[in-house]
Image (spheres, rainbow, N blue to C red):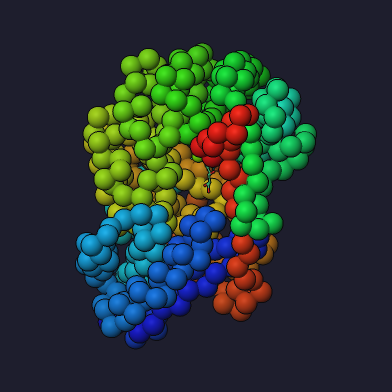
Length: 408
Ligand code: KDG
Ligand code: MG
């Protein structure tokens, strides 16, 4: 069996999905997602300019060797752009493998450990009252886990993942008005004084069963994060995410010394070598890598296996920038992983998105049920894809009130 061709498509309904399609001489094709949020054209050109010409003629069944060829074969290894491109190739090769075997991918990993995978939604509000309304909607829809973010009194701008006005939606992942970012103003003191009480009010209102998650989005220093983690303990969080910038791994030791709050990190990691020490030293409770950003199923499965040895559960990144192909790859891993924790899931299922990526996967009642279709179980409609093209966009940047640049 040989790879005969591969194509890259960029675009989607209000998203710049980067979709890879690998064709073989047996008529079977595989699909993968290389969407690197706000830098989408870069993995796309790495794929077309370098990786695809090197794929033609290879046997698609040798997905391990092909992964090694691209990763080890590159002297300058890793990084988010390359890993997203390898991630798409690897996903597509697993898709082909599943189609050859006529089995859904979870069967190739070892079968199902559970029927449905718990997902968490993003509740958000301009203020606490607004956030409570948003949480209540998700609870009513059957969600068992909800991430909560709200505006902080006195903060000059709305803040991470928070709308400017009550009842508003915040397109916090990307602003498609151009590649120049808008600016948010941040004040850690105001946040640290307000948020622990707000989390406690949410716990009191929704009771002990709701799994409450909160994302600090890398904005505190290690000392502040340790103080914050200690102060949110009474709210009994399911996890506290990215309390400090991801580069400083010793920060997590400091947080652990002061608090038992469960810590989730890893959405910006792209290799096992960025998280093996954290996992082995049991400094985190949930690992948040994404199949796209961390080199595909082959590499992420290694991270999951290592995590399982150290009581670290999965909580794969599921921001709306991941296409249904990445979410399907993660759903198959979620169905199998003995150490599954939770899956971040934002409603992708608009009619336009479903038309572009038809599938039988099912999200209902706060649970994701993986389909039994062979491979990833997601198709790609090329005629639909012609409706879309690349739209430049950006995340905001963050500054302190005196103008100092801070972490988004
Ligand atoms: O592109 C950035 C987003 O993926 C990030 O802001 C989302 O932190 C995030 C999350 O937890 O989903
Ligand atoms: Mg996050």
